[in-house]
Length: 79
Image (cartoon, rainbow, N blue to C red; front, side, top):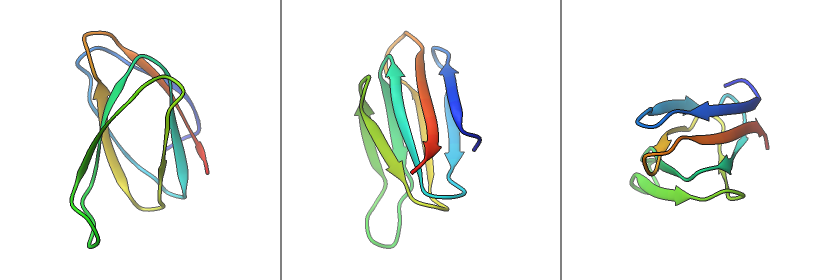
């Protein structure tokens, strides 16, 4: 995934895989994030609000979409 700021439209879901340790930070709106299951834990659902972030380990995947009927803006940068 390229670094930068990105917009999610209402109803849009995306899948992101980290090529290196990365941080996804919500800038505007709220997002529903699902982390893939690993050998250590099952899949996990989170709702993140503006200013909250999630570290994604190299090789791990998340799926996310806006939490409500509004879009969301997020950044994706190296950890």
